[in-house]
Image (cartoon, rainbow, N blue to C red; front, side, top):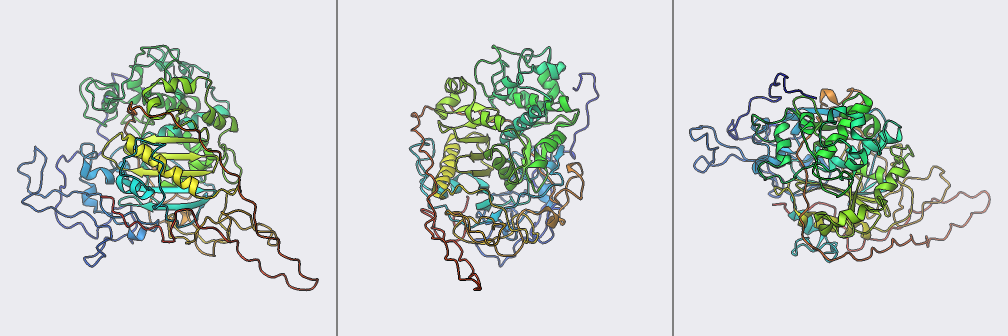
Length: 640
């Protein structure tokens, strides 16, 4: 913990340039040092619908900061423009490194910089790498399905904007940076908008909390702690704080008695003080020196284990406990116990304060697919697709069932009026009475959706300038539910790409067909899997998610050994998390049971007479998705 008598460390980044756009001129054709040389900006002859890099404003109308009236250089703005595109990086362009240099601690939240900054936080804040390890990548079979015409259920999710009626409406109106839906090893739909890319980390905000709690669960499984342990047993430095007497379970479920206001714009609120302590807001003479110093000064105002009150500080204490029981930085603990086991293609990162404390409540950054891999592990009950156990089945089951009074205390909170029938357990949200769906929520539009009944995982990353939008949350939930219901369930085991596929970068274009592709049976004479998600093996060709193919991009030094880590520079971001509005909504309807997979109507092939060759089996036919069209998943709707 940083003491009051310690020397104040220097600012961890280059001196701030408060004026936007220190350099003027055309920025086309210049890529950042962490991007591949092949990612060139479009030329003047580019298609009018392609995504364009920022342009230099007219000198007569350029706006400067209030202290820069005499500035001679033009501002450079970064409008979030263009269409969502498929996973191919060829159509995704970047502004220049000169623009990146204009983003710092003072400017990264400015609207014109926000979308870009969320994918470049490691160049603004100090970060700790969460290595992916040396294990195999959990690869995906890629399918292009157009889910945009699907109708969303606004009756179930009434906060969604009344003008949004389809999946496409939600995507087009919620500042989407990237989104992905997977099931059983198949990427059913995947799109990116500038500046997001398949191999680029994006800030998760409070979805980070679900990852941190999973690390705690893995440590409990390893016998290093118990949820019933007192917080101060592992972190004696908190003995004189409001955390005295609180248990780890109190923190996991945000039911400690700590006095903490999550109102971001409220002067004097604890979340504002946390921001100041970690340089997310301008410091004052009384600001705490780092996250740990801040936590030791918190007090309590109610009994521990009583009400559910959403508090970001609980997650930061959990990360501190993880460090205490292992003697390792949180980033390394997260890698060893979770991230290195899920088949991630890239390292993740967590933002740190200038004293080295991890800002775990909302500072983890991952790629789109890696977050889906994490969600799939939870959906499978704590195991990977190859059966390796990351988290005990008991811990995962407890996330979905909760304690006896979890639903009751949640219903009594403001969040209970926004998500009737839901609850909060181990830093996952259950948004309704459906006990098979849990989500992770982050401000500015982040969501991780996990439906264990259908094995559907959805990820949406965004740069919504509004921190908390219940309309966007309900719309995104309705979107993922519509897709989960539209894709027929088969009950098949997770698919795995054919082992003969060659390596290619994560996010390269894949095959296009109407349904997910299941793995080829090990026995060549075995019958093909039954059910609508089964299809012929993917054609020979490069596979998705292989880090070895990404040598053109360099990983941050702290992210792990170069031989084992992916080559994309790792991003992170940090801020706090959401206070869900207290709007009242009608009680949820009973969730519909998942229909069993229909029997395979295809009769068994006749056995040929002895001596005759066995004819090749025809690929199983797959029915079209309800409401889906045959068009490839390339958006015709611009985000702005």
